[in-house]
Length: 361
Image 1 (cartoon, one colour):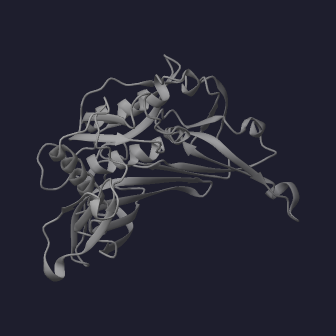
Image 2 (cartoon, helix red, strand yellow):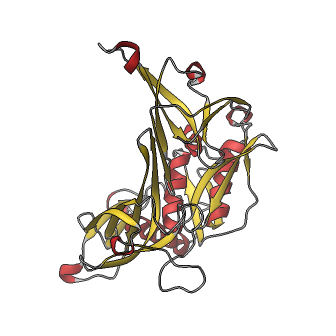
Image 3 (cartoon, one colour):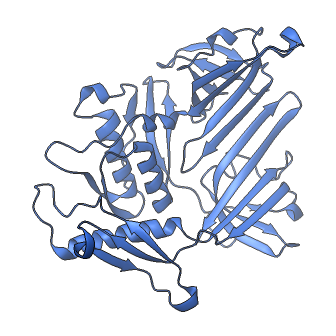
């Protein structure tokens, strides 16, 4: 069993346990992950598994969760099955504790630049260096900005910070996380780029997950356009006939699938409360439309159980966020997709790992 370290919020080690009943730890590239730990309450150190405490999987500074929930039940088997169920979120979930409060004198918190710069702008404004010091989370610091990702313009008003980071992450392809720094005794917010490990590139050694190559034990594949939309009517500010509406998309005829996108929150004023030129407002609405249409793209989901004797080594040959090739010749499926979720399962009977891979276009 992989050891689990119990830490204080200031990263002091309280104890280490490796005799739990089971542990499911889920990492996600775009979204917040979670964990579930089951352990008999009569085992050593279980009293330290309190809400608000951190757990770290082995020595992995990027596999850290904060306990949010505990429950226990007693049945006719007595002490033998008197197990704590301890659940929580990965550490990056603390972003959900903040909303994007606009600065004084402006209707929105605005940012433009690379996707990484924009994400770190919002974390800085609402966690690291907020104007209201009572909103500051002292443990969190920002990694240096390397200005990765596409250039975007973003504005936010009283939205959940984690949800905003998720949207920017999905729009840009960048991942984000909060990892531990034991030297500084800090939690580091950072943004990450996945590697291209697909079969047709020549920069990195390719990773091909396939039952035929004995790297996958199980594989499920879903191809869907149930939620697919390719033409948007984006409505900005105004009422009735005076409401500003722009269109985004090229599809025609039977292939055209329309949707309405409410963008009333997009401001038509700048930071000084002066009216923006009409072409700038239209550009902002169209950018919102493109962002939202990307959420309605055709979807391809794959989930596979990795063989324990796979020729590819986790966290060395591939990791969360990397783009790999998946192939099943019997199904006629060969595609490149990003690893967006990894489930690690530790039980007394052994170790299992599942990958979820997503491609939208």
